[in-house]
Length: 305
Image 1 (cartoon, one colour):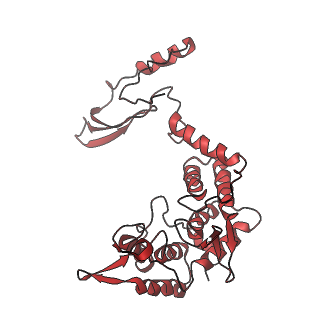
Image 2: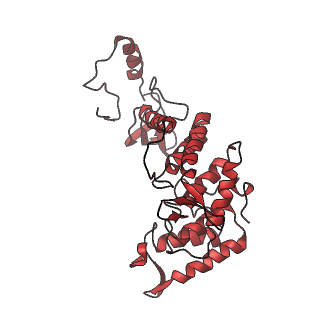
Image 3: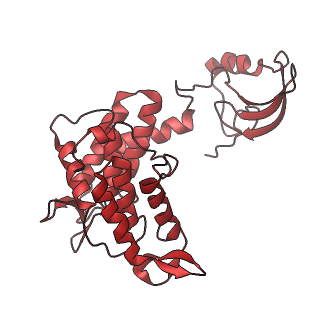
């Protein structure tokens, strides 16, 4: 069914309103802005739970942004409307289902269960709903089950024909979210702590085939910087990134995916390397990936030695 959103609520044409809801709709329609000391000038966002508008405070002329809270709109405590709550519920229920019987299930931040774990963890931080933290932990366990410990002690994602330590498809991405989960709880067995320490080991190898953020050494640098690794280990990875550095138009650049050409993008190229170096050398909390700011409690967990 279409989910049409507009400044004023309208009963969808495909819906016959039940009689018991008519008083609630009348109460909603009775709400006006006539008594508010604001002049609404522009709709910025439409929502079933109320829109967001730009306007002016008529008392002093200040520009303001107004968030509408419609009566009987069914908002959750965190302000999520029915559509957002449904999306959240779908993720939680899927994690409660048995795993699909597939020979090689993907793992990691971009294509595994770690992405949904990050989503659930951020929702938990907004709502305090314990089952979201539990579901995020279950998602992380699913990805950790796809990992193996290498000879040197590093934990990497096992794809059958290769193992991956990287941020996008490998264990470093799992480690990022694992750090944040451990800032809120404990799994009771110590498995998460052990996995975190082994992922840090995987992020300190002497050789990585590419420089990029999602599939190369820059991702290791970002993970180590974010986690609070020992300075000498972080410095070794920064020095190793220099192996890939190239001169381009009088500036510094890095090869992209598969080392085929120079790249300036965030995922595979120079921008991603710059982000990682900024996080490592400047200690700048602004230098982070979306939804993954530095976790204040992460250095207290596991071992970064």
